[in-house]
Image (cartoon, rainbow, N blue to C red; front, side, top):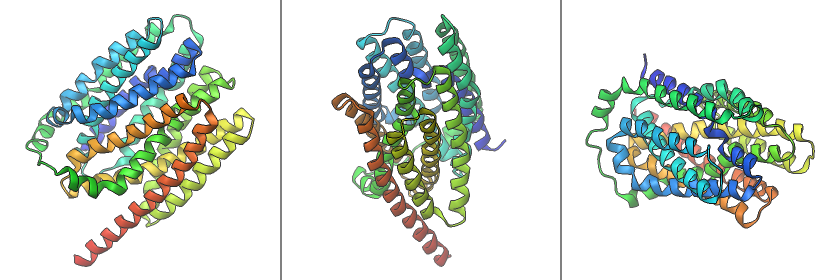
Length: 381
């Protein structure tokens, strides 16, 4: 198999495991406590600690990438069993810290492996593996968690088994990765910061928009009377839309229409947010959450593809991928704490509109720069 296929298989099993419970934690907190402040406290602590952990564990993850992915399972397993207890502020902070550690170990290692193992940087396929896995189980898990009594214990056990299975495909590439990641060069932070500035703006706004798509929209709809199982269907549809959006964006970018993808995305982002804010009909909002999701994935896929290729060509990727996640999780933390300061969904949607304009403007600059770079390279050759 191609290296990208090993990553694809890994992400399918990991996606199934995440879909059993992990993606529903903020909703489960609200379902059990009825307290939005606790939901957003969980999100803020999670993302803030993740930003810190990406810096703290960077060297370890670079040196032991496969081991990091194996180790990330343990804080997830502990967190899922902690979920079985009565939730209070301290339990929720502990859950957030465990998830932050797991996310750092996993995504730090996975993105590093993707950059060096998949030389084509096939972001659409890389993302599709995750979403296929998530689609398979998100509806079923939401139904079980929403309808059946004492279901959480069963779901936790299934989740643990699937996380362990997900590691197997990557273990086949252990020796190759060990060779590739041996003796990575040192990078000057000032040079890296200057080189990455335009990408960093994209990453920051992407973090904000990701929280809105994946956490805030489901919470908002749930409070408006949409059942837990229906939220599961929404999440599955989001993942399906994400697959289509990723491949559509890749196709348009290859056709030289990358800058116009940014224009399409800003229109879809803003239209979706305005409709969700103003139309008091939940199933209309339900539909426009999907519109928002396709815009978000169409923006993400070409940006991550360009970032990966650009940074690998400059020999910066092994460090810049960690700073990328720092910016993303900083954006996520900021929009989470915004609710704690000003508790209104409309305020968060307003931040979303500003972020949509910001990411599309920065994306236009990145795409223009990338196209100019390709043109110069073509003339030289």
